[in-house]
Image (cartoon, rainbow, N blue to C red; front, side, top):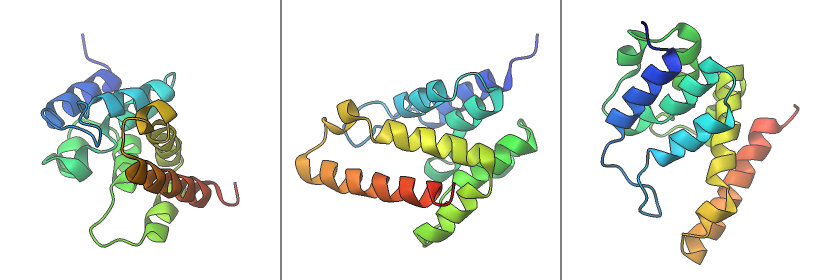
Length: 144
């Protein structure tokens, strides 16, 4: 029996993020897992959520993902992948242009902004991130 694309995405994300930790020292993979849970019910969104940081933060390339996933998912992952030196406004415009990417990014921001998650950080980092995530949410939802 063929694995679903969401299960395949989960497996790839787990392998790719192995050994990584977040700003609070927790296993990084728990973040994509929570983002995927926030978009449950749409298999493409779940797959893109699992993969949303894979190209940006691991050796996995978009070409690697294109071998296993449909264009809708890889286009979203590409839109979600920040480019070196890219202006935030350019990044947000690219994400807004791809509905699946926007859905995943808003779920990503919701997870990043979770008070329980932020409470694990020092006060200065917490305040900086709260402001950063609020700006990002405003940019992504402007005119919506």
